[in-house]
Length: 242
Image (cartoon, rainbow, N blue to C red):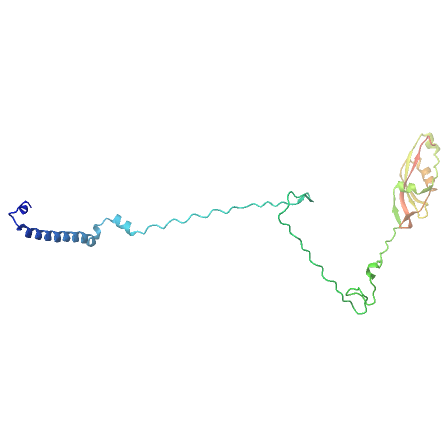
C-alpha cells in the first residue's frame, strides 16, 4: 500500500489488488456455503435438546376460570295470619290483586210440559211452586221407653203424699238411728212397686218399707206420656223426731 501510494509506482499494483479481491470474495462465499451445508448433511452433530425444543408444540393455553356461583336470594314470605287471626298490615302493598269470581250459570228458563211458571227441570207434572220447600217431612216417631231411671232429687220433686214411718220400739230402746236406702219403682200411676233394701239397719228397714209403700207420686212424663221410674228412696230415723 505504501508502494502504491507513491507517485513512482503508478498503477502497477491495481491489477494485483483486483485479482486478490475477487479470489477473497469467492473464498469467503465458498466457506460460507460449506458452513451452511455441514449441518444439513450431518444432522446428528446438532444439539438434540435445542432441536427437540423447536419441534415440540407449545402447550395449550389454560382454560378460562369457572364463572362465579349464582347468589341465592332468600325471599322472606310474610304471612298476614298470626295465631290463626289476621294481623294489621305494616305497609300498603304496591300491587293489590283483584279476585275475579266466576259468574253463576244462567238459570234455565225452560220447564217441563204441564208444569207451572218458575218450575225446575225434572219436576213432576202438575206440581206446585215451593212444594218441596214448604212440605213437612215425615219425622219418624221415637218409641217412648217403658221405664227410665231418675235421681232421688227428681223423684223427691214428684212426691205428693209422704207417710212417716213408725219408730220401732226395740230400736228406740237400743238407741238405734240412721238412714234406710231403698230401691223403688214408681209406676205410671205414681204408686210404689218392687221395694228392695239397699242399705240401713235391719231393725229400721221393715218400718221404712211399710211407710214407703203408702207414698204417692205424680206420674213422670216423657215426650208427653207417663212412664215408670226407677229411683232410690231415703228414710231417716232419728231419736229426736221419734
